[in-house]
Amino acid sequence: MKRFKSADYKGEDHTLVDVDLFSSGLDQPGVERDGKNLWDLSADAQTQLIRIFNERYPDNGQFTSVLNQEYLRSGGAYFTDFTRRDLGMVFTISKAKDYTALGEISSRFSPADRIETLRFSLEIPPEYNLQFTGWNRYATEYGEIEIADMSFSRSLDLNADLSMEIVDGGIKSSSGRKEDQALRSRYLKLNGSISPLRLEMEAEGTREIDLAGNVLADVSLLFDAFPEKIAMPLYSDSSGDAPLHLSQLRFVDVMVPRIKDVPESIIATLEMEYIYRHVESGWKSYPEWDDRVSYYSGRVTKTVTLFTRDEYLPLLYCLGIEEDGGSAVKIRTERAIDYPLRFMDYGEASRFLEWLSGRVLASGEPGPSLPVVVGTNTLLLGEQPLSAALISSMKDLKVIPVYQ
Image (tube, rainbow, N blue to C red):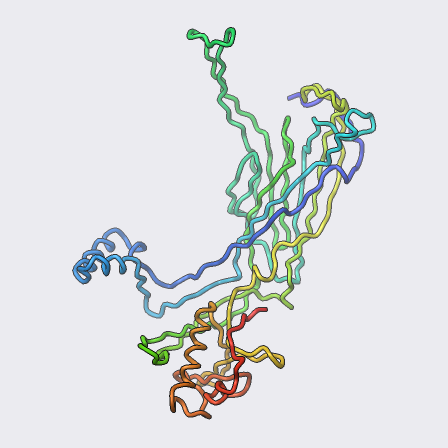
């Protein structure tokens, strides 16, 4: 297909096109549970279980409430992995537009100009212990691709059905002729690849397709993992002003990002190379196949923020004091192994602090100087056993974030 009347390469100009990371965001991981509910079972198993529920819970309210109940398998436990995340990014590619110089011989701007080819990359430093693991999605204003692979090479095609009706004097003729045409043409070529520290994207437009605009890239990330033990206290019901009764304290493993020094922001290097197609006739715009055009190449490099520490670190909480350098409550097992006492959310940590306060108010439970014991585990504050007397003497024991 003829795309120009004449073409010349004029050299480099790094001011014609710009790229920026318009927005980015990490997904929020959920909690994986080792168990099933009614809707995870087969059709036959669902039927049998519903019959059992119908016999056991004749009341409609009770019957409805148990439908979504989870049935944990033997040894089942919660497990959350904060090291595998999906990152959605929106890149903005823009052209420099100087309408005041339109038509001037020295001007490098015309309304018919377009970005014909671009290649941009995003690279993260190795010290973050973070890597790209795969593509999820790539989208432009011309189309969207579900990828789920390390690399891709796709052509986006234009499909259009055009119809024409003959109009005479502004009035449609009832006997007007209708002609249907089906057009199919490739208008965008996309390529992409990923290595652990670098992702690359390349786009090439055909006739009249300008690559300026927004590009959405969705990729998977993997942090180096570090295990944390999370406390899951189980309470029995209490009534009136009676203190909470802690019946069991379970621990589950949670994987969190292992990043040295926990930087405030994750910074990456964004680089773009482009080919700019300039129409020499300036404001006199002709169909693209009859243009005299000049090509310029350019490059843009900048640093961008992918996400902040508040986005990639999990919201875990502990009990402690912040004054005098700070100190957090720990738990010592019967094998004399110490673990930080951490909770999955603020409410769980706050409820455990309420239980500790109740132990202080309960007379003789335990003795004022005896350490607080949960099963075979002993609570510590720093290296000092946590006793009722110590708790009552501290007015600043509170719930605080683990990562702050």
